[in-house]
Structure formats: C-alpha cells, structure tokens
Length: 273
Length: 89
Image (tube, rainbow over all chains, first blue to last red; front, side):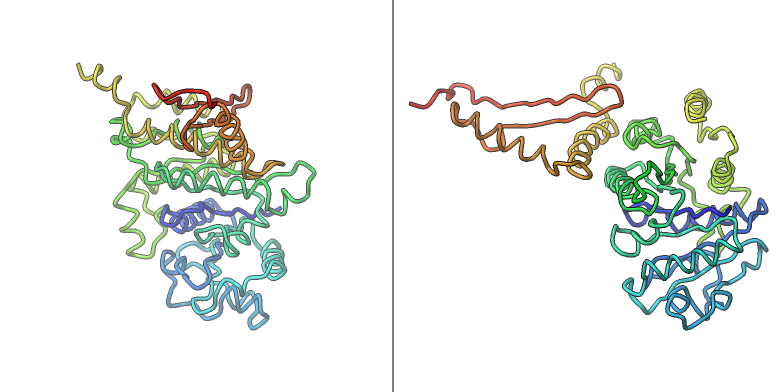
C-alpha cells in the first residue's frame, strides 16, 4: 500500500523543496520506490534541487491535460534507481491543476511507487491545497521563527479540515509530523531562538526531525544533489534520521549540539513512541 | 548577576513563544469553530457593556484564550482609567 506524503509549511523559504528532495532520496536509498512531485506550478524548482533541470521534457500539467503519458514525464534519478521526479510546468499557472487531474495522476503513481512525496508551494491557495488534499501523511516544515510557526499552525488547521481524509468525516485524519529546519542550537541556548520544546508545545504534533542550520544545504542545492546524499554533513545525517522515523523506526532524535540536550530528546521520543 | 538580569527581562525566544501562544489561541478559536471569530465579538460586547458604566478606551479590553488538553482558560483584562473613572450621570 503506497503512501502519499505532502511536504508543506504555509510560509515560503523554510525548506520545503530541500526537504522534499532529501527525504525522497533517503527513502529511495533505503530501497523504497519513491516519486517526488513538484506542485509549485509556474515556479518550478524541484528539478534544480534534484539536479535534473536539463532533462525535463514533459511535466505534471502535460500529464493532467492528457498531452503526455505519465511515463514520458517521469524522470528517473541517475544516482538512485528507486527515485523518480515528476517536474511541474514553468510556464502555466496553478489553475492548470484540477482535483480530478491530481487524483488521476496520484492513483496511477500508487500502482508503481511505495512513496509519493508532494512538494507543496508556499501559501494556502490552489497549489498548496491540492498538494495536501490527497495526502495520507504530512511533513510540516517549520523554522524556529514566529511567522513560520504561525503559518504552520494555519496549515495544520487546513490539513484537519480541508483534506480528503478530513472530509470523510469518520474521524480519519492526515498524520502530521514536524520537521524543524534551520535550527541553530547555540542561538537557542542563548535564548535568541525558540527551542525545539517551545515549537513542539505550540504546534502539538510529533517531531519527525531537527535539521540544523548548515552550509552543506546550500552547497547541495548549488550542485543539484539532495543533501541526504551528503553523509558528511550534519544536515544530511539529520535528514536520514528523519527518514528512519518516517518509516517507523524509533531512532533517537540526534542531539544537535551538546550533551545536555540529549536527555530532553530522549524524553521527547519516549513520549512520541 | 546575569541570572538576575535574565529573570527580569525575558529572552527574545521566550517573548516569541508567548506572543505565538496568545495569537494562535485567537486564530484557532476563529478558524474551525462553530462560531467563527467569537473572541472578537465577545471583546466588542464586553467593551460595550463596560462603556455603559465607565468610560474606557476602545482598546482597553484584552482577551486571552488558552487551550490545553486538560484545561482551557479565558482571561479578560480591562484597563481602567485611573483618576478619571466615574459613572455617567
């Protein structure tokens, strides 16, 4: 049974596409057939982050409108055999996405893939709504910063009311988990940045992972390589850990810095498990 | 000494958390509830009732709703004018 997972945030620039790429790569590395879809119609960027921007011939919108077959639009990653990318259109606008069209493409992808990762655009309008609508699970990407946390809270409200699972009205819900990105443990320790605990207390969803602020993220996007492939970087390892937890492993949330934080993370996992 | 200073002035992270908690309590109340925006209308009603008896500023009524699993609390703060307080008539 395949799973549709939306990577969403409300706010832009918090790391949705970086996280979509890294998590998709991590799932594929563990042997799961994975496809990652760009829902940001008109502002295509997943292709650049994945390093396949020169291989795009047909896109998601062409498939929805019947101008191309799904297999023609899917791009197979050259590094990971289990990974495919479905790029979006750079020239159309988000009105080209339809509920029926998205459903048809997702249903066809479900036949071939274990994980379908939907990279949502920022905002809460059509593209973001359709990216989350058919999701079984959600990864809410949040920076430890007031506007990002507020927007994540809004998105959580939408997942609970405007998704296909929520609309069934039988108590079904999209399983949402928090991915805290651009976290700086030193600044948090100095009281300049909200702590992991603060954000979790406010949003009240389980913690999927903490991605530390890291220069390797920009380096990876410069090179068109999902950062999860960079085993030397703390961010890459943090994404790998998050993928493990997404798959139900109860790996400890790695202490981002300093021994004194470890007890806290252990408590978190004890509670979340 | 630094501990003393810190206890008097909250860290900016603490301020961020508190601002979010207050704001989101309002936004969640008005988001999916059966009575959208009830906090805002409650605030207007309280202001109107109080102003029948005491002259207070239009922004003198502050409402905080805090929700948790076990306990929800509604906190209403009304800023009273100091020496000018009087009943009409």
